[in-house]
Structures are given as structure tokens and as C-alpha cells.
Image (cartoon, rainbow, N blue to C red; front, side, top):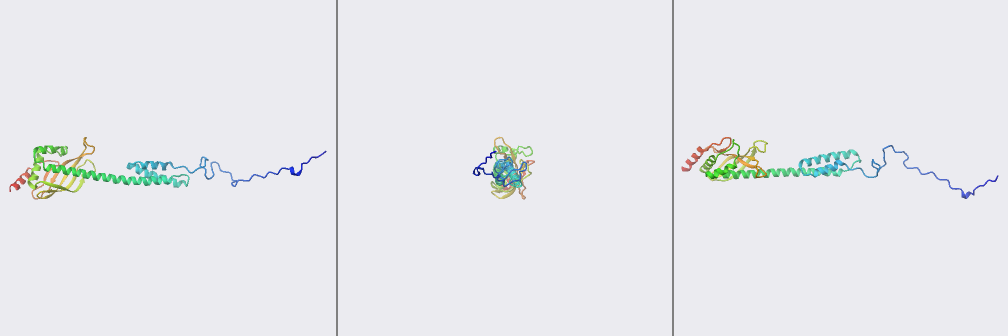
Length: 265
């Protein structure tokens, strides 16, 4: 039997085995290589939703939202640190805390400024009403001033009481040139509570200490409440104090007579 053999040059080369991967250990179920997310898609760590929310909340201008933005920013920063690189957004969390703190400080300053400006406005308004009361020596002027006094029956004054008080002030001290505010103190934390203001009355003949009590009353004509007079006290140890308003509004007739006698003398 004839045997056929192929020439040596026609023998195909023996194929080499495939190169083994540098990582021969199979991956555990659910594990992924570096640079892959849990979904198996290559990319960076997911952005923290809490960090995004903290920035949005801190951008709101109301004070409670500024505080909430700071709190959310601190919480998101803590979660991002604890994730060890699985979450990102630390810069957003820090921005939320910084911006929330700045907004909180700015709003506190604005609130204090507004409170100071309103207090100054109400003090100036009360001084104007007091000066007008000192000048109400005519019955018509006294009646017109009744609308500037508290409508509470406990504090209500009469036109005759206002006129008599103004005449007594004029007879005893002359006209009032100015009123210097010494201190103001609310009777309670209620915004509609009585406000007592210690003052110095600068009259033409002398300076006298005293006090002015006012109350804020809501009005339909203006957005802000209006200051209404409740009581005016001019202290005088020598001749006795002059008082208008308060719980009882007596006519200061005796004081008026004393002033007239002094004037005649």
C-alpha cells in the first residue's frame, strides 16, 4: 500500500495558547472593576441628591430655609465622607452651608435694622403727638387729638381733660421745645403691649423728667400699626406731677389752679 506524506514545509504551525488575563480570579457576583458603577457602566460616582437639595434650599431667602439649607449641607457632607468615594458632591454641600450661613447672618442684620428703624419711627410719632397735646389749649384742637389716643375705655381721655392738661402745662412750664428719649421698655413680649418711654421734657422755663406710654394699634388705612397715646406724665416733686390718661383720666384742675396762681404771682 502506498503511503502519501506531505512535504515538511507544508505543515501548518502549531497554534499558541491564548494569553491569560492579568486577572485570573473570577469576579464575585455583583462586583465590578475599577471605573465601573454598580450598573456596570463606566463613569464617576453618582452625585448626592441631598447635596443638590441643600443648595436649592439654601438659595431661598427666608430665614427658616437658610437654616434648613445649612443643616442639609452638613448632613450631605457627612454622608459623602462616609461613602468613601461612592458619592460625590462635597463642593455642593460646602456651598450650601456657606451660603446658608451668609443668608442667615444677613437676614438677622436686616431684621435688627428694621426693628430699630420702626422703633425710631414710633418714638418720633409719639413725640409729635405729645407736643400736639401740650399745644391743645383750645377745645377744637383738644377734640381733634382724641383720635390719637387709645380707644380702649380704660385709657380713653376726654377733650376737656386734654384741654385742661395743656393749660396746666402752659401755665406751669411754658411751651415744650423738645422731648429727649432716655429709655424705652415694653410692658410684655406682646407686640401690642404698652410701651413705656422715659423722657426729659424741655420746657421754656425748666426741664422736667417724665414718661410717655403708647400702644400699637392695627389700622385699615396703613399696612403698619399706628402708635396711640395711653398716658403722659410730667414729674414735679415741688408742685405735684401732671398726668393725662392711664387707667383713670382725672382733670388736673388743681395743677391748673396752681399754675395760674404762680402765673399771676
